[in-house]
Amino acid sequence: MKVEVEKQADSTSTLRIELPPDEVSKEWEAIANSFTRFAKIPGYRPGKAPRKVIEAKFKKEIQDELTKKLVSKSYHDAIEQEKLRVVSLTNLEDVQFGDDKSMRFRATVVTAPEFELPEYKNIPVQLPPTDVKKEDVDLALERLRDQSADFVDVPEGGIEMEDFVVIDFEGTVDGQPVSEVAPQASKTLSGGKKFWLRVAPDNFLPNFSEQLIGQKPGETRLVIVDLASDFPVKELAGKKATYTVTLGEIKKKVLPEINDEWAAKMVAGKSLADLRHMIEHDIEHEKEHEIERAKEAQIVKYLHEHVQFDVPPVLLRNETRRALGELVQRNRERGVSDEMLKEKEKELVEGAGGLAAHRLKTNFILRGIAEGEKIEVTPQELRERIRDEATRYNISPEKMRKELEEHNGIDGFAEQILLGKTLDFLKANVSVQPSVEPAISEQKS
Image 1 (cartoon, rainbow, N blue to C red):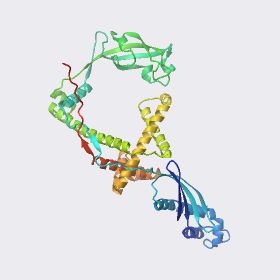
Image 2 (image 1 turned 180 degrees about the vertical axis):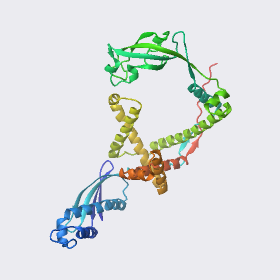
Image 3 (image 1 turned 90 degrees about the vertical axis):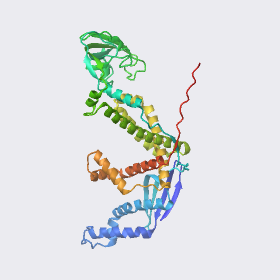
Image 4 (image 1 turned 30 degrees about the vertical axis):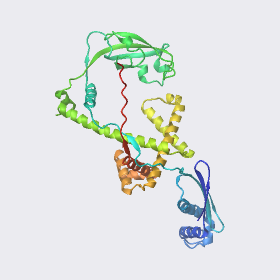
């Protein structure tokens, strides 16, 4: 097999591959023999038509079958022969057959960028403290206490700051309902029935809570809100919104006492001491995760600072599209409307581009380290990953593997495992540095 490699800009290479006549003829004969046995030719019994007749009638079909059989295999053989680090096949084209039964075709590939790896063992990292302080447990208890608070009715008097109220309200702008002025706005901006609101200066719309002070159950008030010129919903930006607010109920938040009785309500049969111990264990577990996250973030930062190369533009474009789709989906899940996403399109594209470049560079470096350290993915690891994913989606491992194969997802799974193992290797070989305590300013005498 003859291979010519023409390197181009942007990590792209063109391979011109030529297979010798004897190799092509051997496969041609095997395929033509199959056609001879089964082809139906008028005037001949099955399997009795002359070879020349078969090859003349089915020349295109034989070539197509030959192309399928030889092109993929010879392409991979060419990569191995030339020791190319191909990360993406862009195109296979221009397949030609010579009169001497030789075969030629062209492959366009994207190769991995070349770079020097730094010393990646003993990367210096500083880790967050692992000890659990009494204050940490106390704070967690307070959060749990707040979550288990009761809300009791206030039968008399008017609204005060930090009350919780249940209201019916409806908003208008220039005499039109907010829902008509801004159809894409959230329903909360338009109004609602039996809407719970914490009355506080920093909550809900500007100056909304302040205008409710003193309002009594059954009373209706007009609340006027000046919306800022940079308000996220452009139809409402700079507008004056008027809300008709009818108060239903006033409630006070009552926190329970922290004692054994309360602890038993939180976790059946547990005392306050038991609950504190459980919380302490949970905090320890979270701190372990924090340490792993801190290691990973500092390792990746170190590698990016010590390795310089340009990411192949073709891969960057594809990864940016994927990252953009992820960002859009996450924003939609947070309730951001498509109209608002359109307004932020430039920022989203820039963010996706940065995320894609960072992700690709990280992956290239980790793959380089994996290669140097002979880190590989075993069939057992891949099977376990597929099984875990199948459990997640409540389907059989066989069906999960079939779906992955149909969508070329097996290689993606294998790469995720490989990159994870490489990060684990790096995290196991860091050099932990003492944390720098913040300087304490001297007090003036």
